[in-house]
Image 1 (cartoon, rainbow, N blue to C red):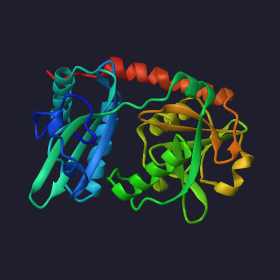
Image 2: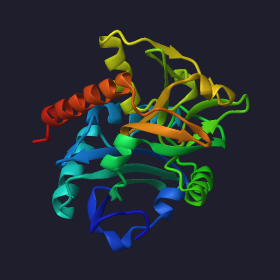
Image 3: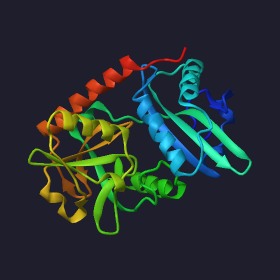
Image 4: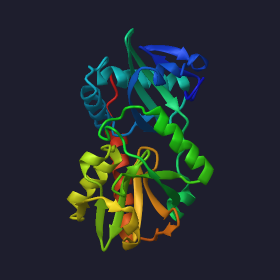
Length: 276
């Protein structure tokens, strides 16, 4: 079954039993992908994800094999067939010489617990740079290496450190540091433009919360009070430790951002337009 979660998946528009899922359709050839979180059977921030998917495809020199409307229709069919409502959906366009394979399938939902939202999570530093940080392209070797490091350390996430010692982003998240009521996050060109990150930045703009787009050096972390990660699964999640460095998870600005973001999640659920 591979990484497919649930009883079935969609391959090139057709429902297929989950036991027939083949990982080679994801990790062999060139794959562009997107992961959406579904709550109550509704994909969060669907339009944002489709825009990023299209940008990734174009950057990779490919063309969209199916429309956003077709993806929306297929995911509703898949949700009904699989009978799941709160889960992550993965969309993969796999390009090989023989053609393109379009996959829609659910992946196991690994969401933070209430305790983790309240007490924060542990992270580690990991020396790595993405070749194309602005594009979601599957890098199986990097993904596998980080996964094994997380298992060995028991950490929730790895924060990537570039050759200059700067913290850029998480392996599957974006990162924000807080100091004196101001947010610090890496410049856009150094990170994947996370959908959650985008909405947090919009919240900051609308609420006059100052943001500085600069990387935090790994040797200067002690200069900051708090930090949090943003992502499809964690949403807005406090970080209590990076290696041996501890941070406060009781920060009024962070709590405020978490509330604003959850309000946006509710708006996204109520505004999603299902295909006819």
